[in-house]
Length: 233
Image (tube, rainbow, N blue to C red; front, side):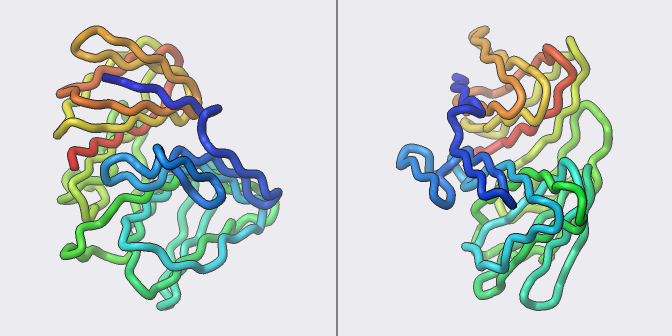
């Protein structure tokens, strides 16, 4: 079963220096029916104005994945660690209790656009504080997984996150580990097919809840870029 959540249905914020779209309850946006999905707690797309910063804050024990779409970012923690990322990079932060984290747009004349995901972390798992990778331009790339396979970032949770780049008319089937997944369109138009021939179409910024499917098949209606988040637990 596939249930679409369009970009227009998401929470919105515009503070001038920060513009945001929230898939789930976040900040001032609250919906008791949308507090997350399985271990996926947050899925935001945010634009920071030139030179803007998100000030230091602490987080629950989550893995924070930042996918930089445009611009240049720096992430810092209160222990003096820092890492920089540019468009096409993914940064994974293993948030720790008592440590604060900040984000900075390094450019004084360009906006920073990125997607951010929070995933519940298993309490007994410890990973490097910061991990980084550059995405390859290929039809399907595993960018995060529990064991770091195929050069992916290593999560503290049983989640597999795929980055997809598809040409118009291209079809791709992805097997899933369990009963739940979430599909997020970054740009372009794509439709998803289920084993019962159910079809759901997504355009730029739309998402879709996927339930009780062993495999999801995607067909690109235009050149498409998307994330598929495999969430068995």
